[in-house]
Amino acid sequence: MVSFLPPDLSTTFLVSAILPLIIGFIVGVILKSAIKIGIALVILVVILIALGVISPNDVLQPLLSLVKSGSALADYAQRVAGYLPYSSLTFLIGLAIGYLKG
Image (tube, rainbow, N blue to C red; front, side, top):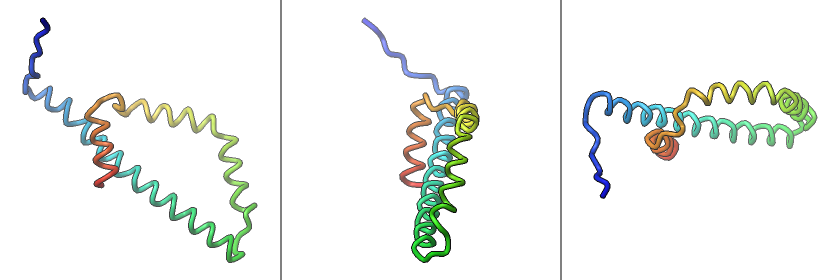
């Protein structure tokens, strides 16, 4: 028979449980804000294209150059993502709370 021991409520345990929760909450709020800003930029570009202020080529050329340099950006994104405790359950809970309620 396997016995289940509850975790001790030491300071170390509480910090290791609460810190990823807080980081996840902050990342969730930032992610939600970034998505809102991205949607607003897409709507603005579509309106400017419809009004004839800019051409679709003016938008596509910077996007294509960004895609061409994607491997360098992917390496940077992997390095930044390595700092996040995304395998922690409390981080994922904080991320969900931050995204939904933040």
